[in-house]
Length: 476
Image (cartoon, rainbow, N blue to C red; front, side):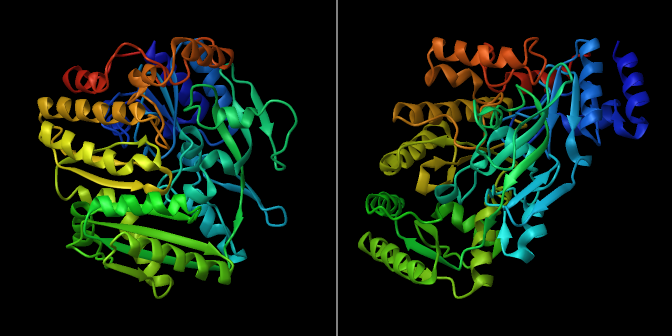
C-alpha cells in the first residue's frame, strides 16, 4: 500500500518532491523537541492546489497527514506520531503581497519569520512576533503553535498579528477565513485555527499585520548578585504598571555559558541579569528607562547599563537569542521547557526548579520571558543514556505540574504537541477536553490530521521516542 501511495504522489508532484527511502526519512523523524517519530513518506508541495490533491490522495489510503515548517518546534508538533504522509512547506516560501498602505502582508507558510521583516524594513516596518529561532522558523509553523518571543510582553503572540488564513480542510476543500481587515463578522475562525497545532486544517496562506518601527528604542542590561533580586525586580516593575517591550531574565550560570559562546558583553560573575527593552516616542522612552533603572537599583542591581547604540543592543539580543545553542556546548543535549506562572511567583518558582534539578541530578539553566511569566528552564542531559532521558522527562513534568499548581499554564508559546498532551488533565476537566475534541472532530472527523497531538492518549512523554529508537517507525 505504501509503495502504491508513493508512486501516486510521485505522479502528482514529480519524483523530486517525494521522499520515501529510510535514509531520507530519518531527517524528518525529529524536530526541536526530545521526541522522535518517523513519517512513511515526505512530500514538498509548491501550491495550495497541490496540498489539496495530496490530502485527497492520502484520504484514499487512510493515511495520517502531518504538516511541517522548518522543524524548529519544541513540543513534537511537527512529528508523524502515527507515520503517514508529511507535507513539508519549505517550497511554499513566497511573500505574495505587501500592502504598505494598510500594513498587511500575505505570505505562504514556508516564509522564514525574519525574512518578512527584512523584506519590509526599508519602509520602516517589521513583523513583530520574534521567536528565538526567528532566523530559521517559518510563519506557518508559528501560526500552528501560536509562537511568541521576547517582545510578547508588549505585542502579544502570533494570533495577535494574523488577520486571515487560507487553509485546506481534511477533505481537500480550500477555504479562506478572515482577511486584511481583521474585523470579520461572525465567529473568529482565524483565531480558532491559529494555535490549533495542525489538528484542524493545513495552512497554505497567511495574512499578517505589519508594525511600524518605533521612534526610539533603549535596551537596558541590569546586573544582579542573586536570582531573587532579579525576579523581585520584575514583580516590582509590573506592580508599578511599567510595561517594557521586552523583559528577559537569564541566571548567572546560563549567562556565563552564553558569554563564552557569543561574547555579547554579559558579566560572567553575576547571579542573574535582566535584559529590558523600552520603546516608543523619544520622551516616553527616556522616562520609562529612568523608571526601570530606579526599580532595578532599589532591588540591589549592582549595575544598570544602557546600550550605547544599535550595534550594542543587537549584540545583547544576539546573546539572548543564541542562548539555547550556547547551552549545547555544556552537554550532549538539552530539554527546553515552556511553562507559565503568575509573575508574582517567579522567585519561589525558580527556587523550586533549582531544588528539583538537585534532587534529580541535573543542572537546570533558566532563560525566560520574565515580564509575562513564561519560563524556559533548560535541563542538560545525555540522550544516549535511556535512564537519564527518562529522569529528564520526569523532572520536566514535575516542573510543569508545579506551574499549574501555582495558577499557571502548561505552555506559553511552544504548544502542547506530544510533549504535554498527557498533562492536559492537570489544567482541563474531562468536560473541557471533550468540548475541545468536539471542535477538532468538526474539522477533522477521521482524526487523520496530526494524530496523537494535544489530547491525552494514555502514552507518556518520551514513550514514542524510546520505541522509535528501539524498533524504528512502523510501516504504513
